[in-house]
Figure (tube, helix red, strand yellow):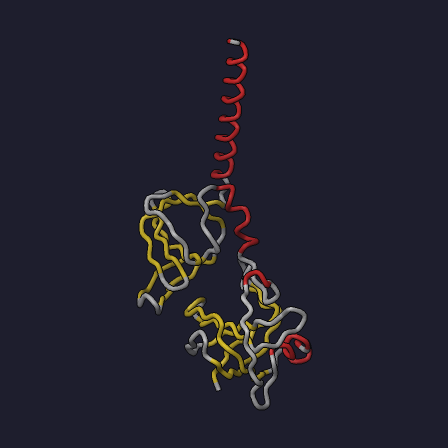
Length: 232
């Protein structure tokens, strides 16, 4: 019996050492940041986190979440925005790192790079609204845009739709998601950038330039993007 207990103790000790070595290996990865949360600011879409890493303070922005001050978090990657102005907060940040998430363990940061990928074809990240909107005069529908994207790439188009999502002042642009009820092979959501302000639920007609395969890095890529859009 005593020998059995000694064996069990040795197994637990080895397992504990392996876990500690694995955590140390994860945290020693230079790409993974270990931070302690100092301050939380909530907005309608984002949670801003002031964190301390060693002796340095940084601001992080992630999709809205609950976070505990004093808690330890981990993240990898991110897109830094310098001299960032939040219109919702009416505040300037010298630097903000935009992330898809922060994790409570270093192992959970491995999927961050993949999680930040967004294209208009990812149905799991886009909710389809029940809308049916007539196209603008002289304009095209979202389904027509996707079905003939190669022919109209680089051209200016006019599209009418409902604003289903709106994020302001990211990379010095406002980001709008439009839907008009049409669909092409499961593609029904159009992403638009503009300097103008919009509201979720508004039905708008916009005019902008068609850009294909736009990649901003850090996983933010778009099959089709309408840039420099203006409301007509």
